[in-house]
Length: 252
Image 1: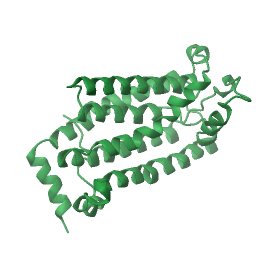
Image 2: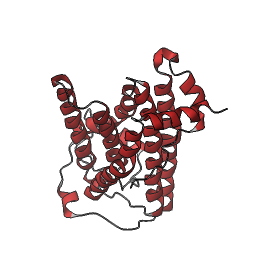
Image 3: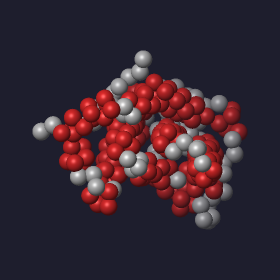
Image 4: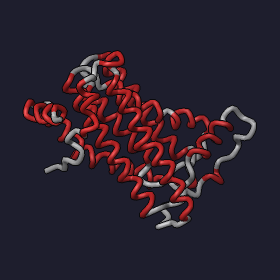
């Protein structure tokens, strides 16, 4: 058994699907990036600041491990690399109409999963009280970048870590679309996993998240991928569900 939330394409896709070859065959990719911006990124900023305004902590997941992990300033590079994952998922699901259908449905589910995390931020808010451990960056090349991170993210975006959730989802969909069947793809997939691992670690070494946040992010991603996302994507490999998708896109 698996859930099928958002596995049916939204009506808003109809004109984009019919004209998917426009804009150098990138119309759907561009629309996906726009949706991520307006349905995920902007609401995140609002929710993040709402949680800060409420100043309510449901519980503290802080452990000695969180305090012992060293701050590493250069890890801001893999941390900020998250913003490359969003267009990567949108851009690389372009090899066939089957992949385009999966691209649309995957990002619908990704957006819904993002809002699930927003609910946790509001209902069970946790303050990440680790920024006092950020030291030694004044006057260095890393100072403006750390300042940017702190300016965008108020310390109330704790669990599950969206950095972990969303990067993991993109890694999973890219591995789904491009299995390591050749040496070239194997090298690219290995490089992707290394970059992703550094990103996950960076959430801890930049003192942006607790270990609890990373673990719950991985668990959330693993469970939703296995029992929701992947089964729905698998169905779109079949003619029955391709026809159902196309029927929705053909409705007036």
